[in-house]
Image (cartoon, rainbow, N blue to C red; front, side, top):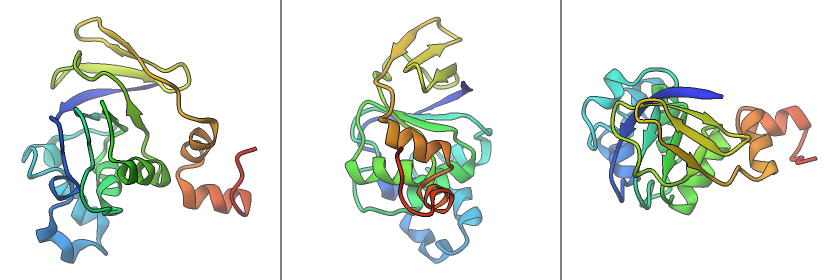
Amino acid sequence: MMRGKVWKFGDDVSTDLICPGRYYHLRSNLSELAKHALEDADPEFAANVEKGDFVVAGRNFGLGSSREHAPVIIKLAGAGAVLAESFARIFYRNCINVGLPAIECDTSKFEAGDEIDIDLAAGIIRDLTNGATVTFAPLEPAMQKILDDGGLVEHIKKHQGFSIA
């Protein structure tokens, strides 16, 4: 079970908004780069997100270039998961690969500041602020195993190769 506060974003949040290109020089210092996560979409996010909070967005989250740094810095900033109505394909897979849950669901019931809890295994999100419940298709077992292991690199180390068994 995961619990945290909603940070609400709209549709079409690009990897350029998540990981601003002007900080390209910080790509080898991810903890410093994370201080700028989503600052072009919400200047308050990186400074105020708390460990376990959730990035919640509309359609097509993570579109644009395939910056692997984008989901990494969201995770390093403290977010416990990203919820969106839909994801750009590469961004979605990069989230799983770095161990950041990406949940495709109806996000219209959540508002900025709401406290929610998520049961990944059951596919249920409960908004503790407004009482709404949203269901989603639980992740495929292979993806859940990668997340459980902390991301693809840790999964490969643990299993000395790729294994979904």
